[in-house]
Image (cartoon, rainbow, N blue to C red; front, side, top):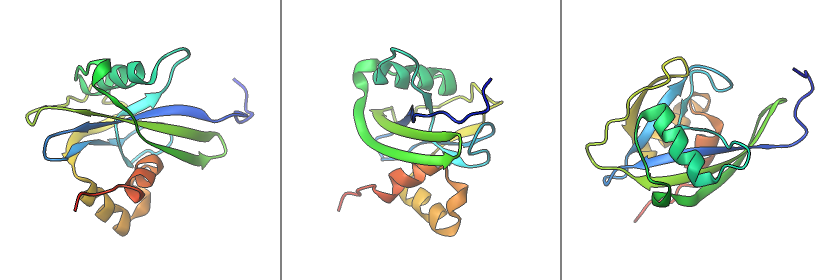
Length: 149
């Protein structure tokens, strides 16, 4: 494995699994960059994979929820994150509706402490108190979040 940083940004897909009340799924990262930070489910786009396929795959792998590829709104938003010398990402956020009683399961406990629902207002409050407690792509999404009046 090369010690040279990549010479190009990578593409990540962050998923917003939205309940009818506007709450969405988040969890605390355990591994990789962003350990200990609140983040959305998601991951890296694989070679020749569509954004919708990636969103559905990551949702199933991480949360055990099946979302049809046609259910995604893509892009919901896009953020550019330079996290460190080795991590320059373009994150495409995909959103899909889930039932009010949807219960994500933690299928990758080595990568995530567990899943719960929160609101963007709660995430924004966390950022006000301690910006580093929230993964950079989610912080960027929260910064530009439009709330209904």
